[in-house]
Image (cartoon, rainbow over all chains, first blue to last red; front, side, top):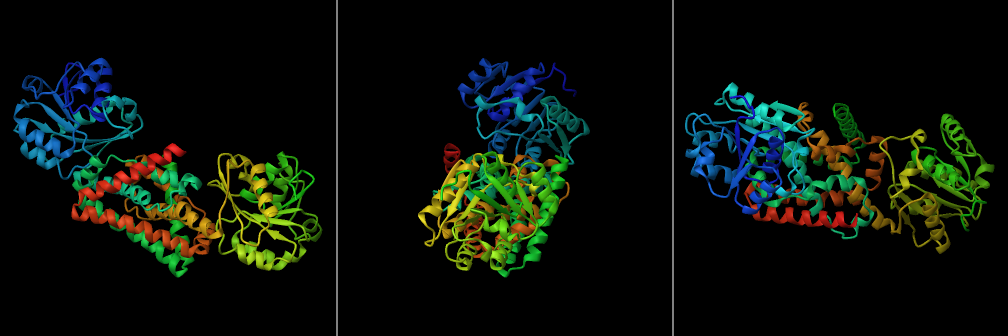
Length: 286
Length: 286
């Protein structure tokens, strides 16, 4: 299947990401439908030209008529949906998702689909600090990474289609990772960093601290403003990989702690030089 | 003493901060002299209008003629300087500094000064990622905090003079803290955050990680680009307070770790909500 504008796309879950997908796809001339829980979100989507039609019920005709279905749901809701309504997807339909962790969900979903329906998983690494379809904006994809996460059960065509979707949405960098590599990378780059920010913010013991703060504390806690329902689910869904990255980070943190405690200035400086070199490399590539 | 432009100001150590002080003070019409190690820095200061005169030798006449002396040196260099040359300061001179930690240095310096010379300590919370007088810029003071750190040995006049200096330099917020409160605040807000950034950067075990990174990793490691000579000295100079803050942070980090390990989603969400509330408060005040 080639993603030309004759294809009908269905978004399940019209929130921040689902709405941003819809907006980008409508701009490119696709017919976009939506199924979502809240009727107000459908109204918003229609009034703002994000979708051509939408419903809050699981409409068999709408599902059966779709060529591509994008699931923009919480992991456990996605799993439940497929379990309950997966039989409504017609043969030849490709489905994809936006889930932030993969190992716990990709195989489960693929196992539950009937033959002829392909699930090719993707992670659009984009978001905003505010949720909801009212805040959707396809500009969040500009300059962002889009990761296609196939398993051995995916077809080359399915993978190509998913990449094409990333291009249409306007992502800057499109890559392919296994579920395991994806989850390790996310555990380190995204989940560990959010865990650090939350921990640091929870460690504040002086209300006046904010009066004096400079840029460093501001930088480290920007992401401490976090959707607890979503992130707690994603943390637990990626438990093993995340604990592993937390262990490794705590090892280097404890090494620095020991340097300070023992007055080992040379080792401390070695760590600081390593971090400096790496950060400069990083700036060069950015 | 009132800081009118008849007063002669001497900067000892013409680096990033010393140079930025000089620049701001010259703009306000003061006579600014400098003593620094590197002759090229004097040349730069003269050619760029930062100073009226300067020398690389410890010039007794220059020191004796100064009303206010600003020491912009590493803590141990500052201590050595006072020990060796403190007798050259004439009675009535006020001296101040820019040192990032206070407990380890303020009392030591005050103990070594002859009667009639007052040391009133200050911490200008401003800087850049690049050092040296060539990068000095008085714009770094705009919007920044300036903290006066007196002891029981300081006079109301000395404290007032030091505050006035902060105003002349263009700082947005001028406050007064004891050395102990200052060091605790710095340990948490500045040193702990830099320690976290360095540890996180040292924990990277995949060179390709940088390819996928989003804003959160970028935010948390910006300050991992660090001057190892200066920061290792400041970390060790504030050892007790820093270890204490590291302990407290590690406690909350470990609490989050345990939530993930035990699947305690409620406690995890409680931490996330606390961090979110605090960060929003913080944004409101900013």
